[in-house]
Length: 227
Image (cartoon, rainbow, N blue to C red):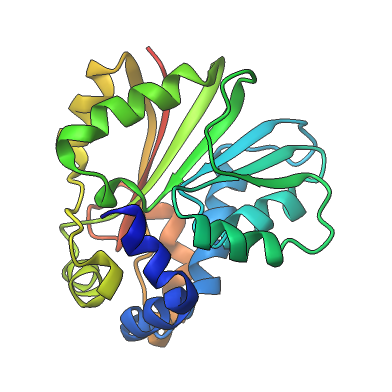
């Protein structure tokens, strides 16, 4: 998709998103908090002072959660949509360790780079160059965390199909993505499938941490490090 597309959808983003995920019985806040919990469990310790980049932050919902949850860290949201960034800045509300930018940082290395449901908007032929760019601004011991919709899950395919701003999206298959990761000089440190149960089965969500190896979750995530 183009910058114009995302600018066009920025004012109605939440409306379209919540309509498309209605089948899950949850709203956008649930999925933001789910990602945050994954990061807390597998990636980020609460007392660390880190540089955290939210690449493709959109309206900055997850970015704000990160800044609030990790007050010792410096959290940066980046997006190509200036309209989305405008709204994100308006919602910032006195969070001192949070900023939103139009250009990727080049002079400071990032400990953690989060790419949450972004790669399916990037043309397949451009994904390698984007991932290589992210690697170049990552500290030697840094990590890139990628969340994506799982193409094997029929509900995820339905969500992407029905969401207006996903009209040109091409879902990211885990195994080809893993091979691309290796070509970029990175490796998969951890892979996990997530989001298994809709709201009407919420009583089963307690077992989700034990199901991460099953390729049936609505989403999946990779933790990447240097080879």
